[in-house]
Length: 572
Image (cartoon, rainbow, N blue to C red; front, side):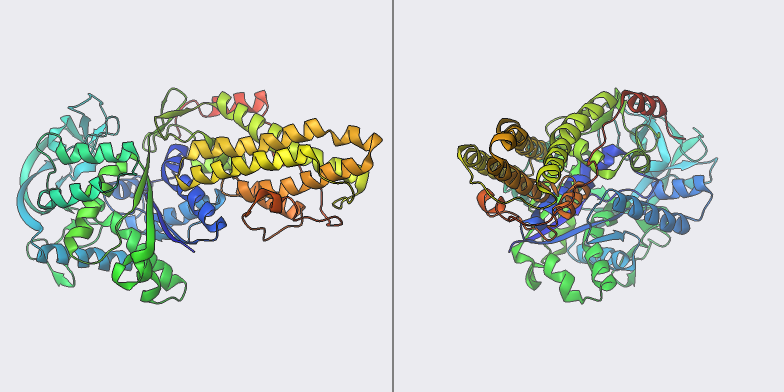
C-alpha cells in the first residue's frame, strides 16, 4: 500500500470561489485522492481556508463584521460548499488555527537562527486619507508590465508578474480610493531566498517529471532579471500571526504580523496537526506524514494549484522548509493548471464575474459540474467555459452515453427477466472482444490517472462507456430475445456487470452517480478491478438489482439560455 499526501492550494476566505478556482486546485486534487483511495492506497488529503492578509480584512470591512467573526462564518460556508461538490478532504482546516500560529512562529525562529532572515529598513506606501500604511493588496493601480488597470500591489492578476506597490502606475488606496499616497519608512523582515538559490535550483532540476508549466514558471523566477529576490515576510496589519521567534517576542516587530504568503503554505502542515486534534490522534499520527525522521520518508507528496500559485510553492515555501534545517517532507510533484475563462472573459472572485460554486449547485447537482470541469481541465493551455459546450458535454457524455446505457439495460432486464441478473447462455466472440478492448482501455485510464493527465483520463473513461454502448447496440438483446432468450440473458448479465464496473471506474469523476449505480446493482463496497474479465463476473445469476431513476437529465435549450442570461453580468 502506497502512502499519498495530497494538498490543494488553499482558497482565500474572501467570499465564495468561482468554478475557475475549483478546477484549478481542489477538484483535480479530489479526483486524484479518490482514485488513489480506490486503488487501495493510504491517502491524506488536506485543504484549508487562507484567512490572513488584506483580502480577509477588506472583505470583513465590506461585510461590516469583525475580521475573526467574518472568517469563522466564511470557513463554515466554504466547508459546506466543498461538501456539496463532494470534495473528500480528510480535513478542511483554517490558516488562523493555533497550530498554524505555533508552527509559523517556530519556523521563523529556525530561519532566523540559520541566518536566513534579515531586518530591512523599508519604504512602504502610506495613505494620508486612511491614516495608515497600506500593505500590498490595499493598493491598486496600473501594471507597469502589461497595462492592466486593476493590478494589485503584490501581483498582477492579468500577467501574473510579481509586483510591489511602488511599481504600480497611478496607485490608489483600496480602502478609500485616495491617490494621496506617499512612501514612508517602516521596518520589515525579509526571507533571504537569494542565499538558497543554488539549493532551490538543484531541487527543481531534480524534478524531471514535473509539468512544463510548473518548471518554466519556477525557472523564470529563479533566473529572470536579477534572479531570485529576497522576499518580505511581515506586514503592518492587525489581523494575522504575530511576528515571533518561536515563543519569544521579536524586538522591533511589535504590532506586525507575518505576510500571508509566508504562513499560508505552512498551514498544509498545521492542517494535519488540526486533523490529529479533531480526530483524537497523537502528534505522531500527523508527523508520520510530514517529518521524514518520523515516518514520512515513504510518502509521495503531490500539490495541486493554479499557475499563479506556482512561484510560492516552488520557491518561497521550499525555501522555508529547506532553510529551517528540519526534516520536513518536500513536495514530490506539483500539478499546476492554467486558467479557466468564462464566456469570452475572465472568471474573477473580486469582480464577481462568472459562475460561483454556490450558484452552480443551485442549478444542477455536483456531478454535472465535476464532469465538465475535469474533462475540460486547463492543463496545457487556458480553457473556456461556455454554456453551449457545457450543455453539449452533459447531454452527450453523461445523459446519452452513460445514463442511457444504464437505463436501457436495467429496464430491458426488468421487462424480460425481472429485477435479477438472468441466468443462462454463454459468452461468445462479442463478449470476449469487449473484454479485450476494455482491458486495454482500463490500462490506459489507470496510466493517465497515475500521471494526473486529467483530460486524457476523462476521454478514456468516456471511451470505456462508449464501448459498452457499442457492444449493447451490436449484440441487441431485444432482438436476440425473440429467437434465443438464453443469448439475450448472457448479454444482459454482462451489461449489468458493466454498470457495476462503470460505477467503480467513474467514482473519482462522478461520485454521486457512482453511488447510485452501485446501490441499484446492490453492490456497495465494490473494489477496483484486478481485471475486466473478473469484474464482469461479479454479479452472478440470481443477484437482485433495482432500476435507478434517470442518472442525468438533459439540459434543455431553454434552461441553457436562461442560465446564460442570468450569469451574463457580475455577481452583486
